Image 1 (cartoon, rainbow, N blue to C red):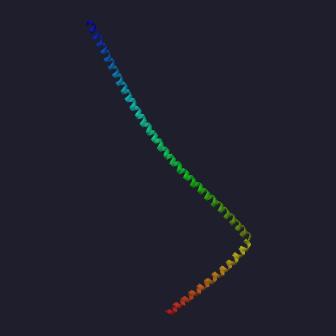
Image 2: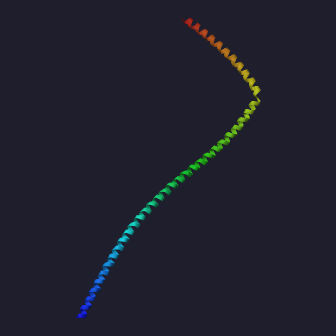
Image 3: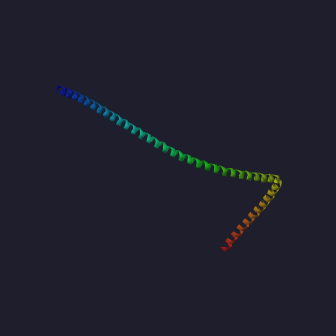
Length: 150
């Protein structure tokens, strides 16, 4: 009986020790679980922040690509405009060369032109004098006509 009581006491001590160890293990497991929950929450928050950063980077990349496409289109338009302007410049240079040639020919025939200008000025003066005389004669005739009508 003493042996059984001693065994029972030993079993109780063993049970108490196991119960204490179980409680300590449960507390440790609870502490570990809370630590893991906090770590999980922190990791989720970091993941959310990283996803936001990735989203922002992707959006910025899209904006940059659109800007690059716009700049490429603008560059192509400017290259086309440059080609048109270069063609216009070549055409204008050709026209200028032709005009300079005509000017040289005209300058070489300048004495003849001066004579033509003097002749035309004389004709213009004669015509101006005739026009003045005709205008004066018409005024006289018109005043006579008014007098005759009265």
